[in-house]
Length: 141
Image (cartoon, rainbow, N blue to C red; front, side, top):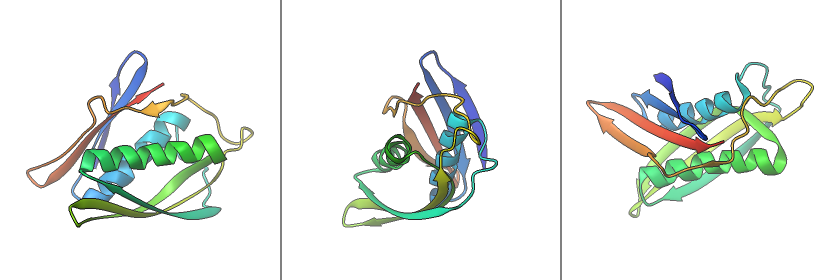
């Protein structure tokens, strides 16, 4: 797996690669929280939650996945570092089932490196090439 930041002016971006599609989505989630917090170190697994999402294609599913995680932070101040993701294709839709684990954001313990506003569709891409899954993500800051 590889993670490489991409520089933008009012956006941040990253590229992720993995041999496994579910792990690609895991690494995208971790990369997003690393961009936001600077590190995942110190995040305890105090709460777990199930997530079920559907998408017409992998780009839509990745957008929904990361948007859901960002929404969780914005509405309930949850930050996550544990992700177990499974992706299936059924009835002409991609389906994601996941268990996510983390804790409430605590400003005495955690810090925000970058305030993330939203996952864009700009340059959002998921592909498989020579057996390796790759994703590109851009986030408004």
